[in-house]
Image (cartoon, rainbow, N blue to C red):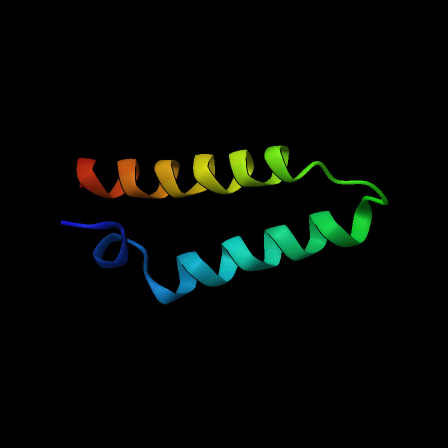
Length: 52
C-alpha cells in the first residue's frame, strides 16, 4: 500500500492547514524544517493506519 492509499482527503487537508498556519505564524521558516515536519506528519498518519 502506498502513501496515496493511506492518506485520506481529510488527512491531507489537515496537513495543508497545519502547514499554512505555520507559515502565517512565522516570519522566517527554514524549508528543511518545514519538509521535515511534513514528512513526520505523513509518517505518523501512515503508521497509525498500519496498526488498525
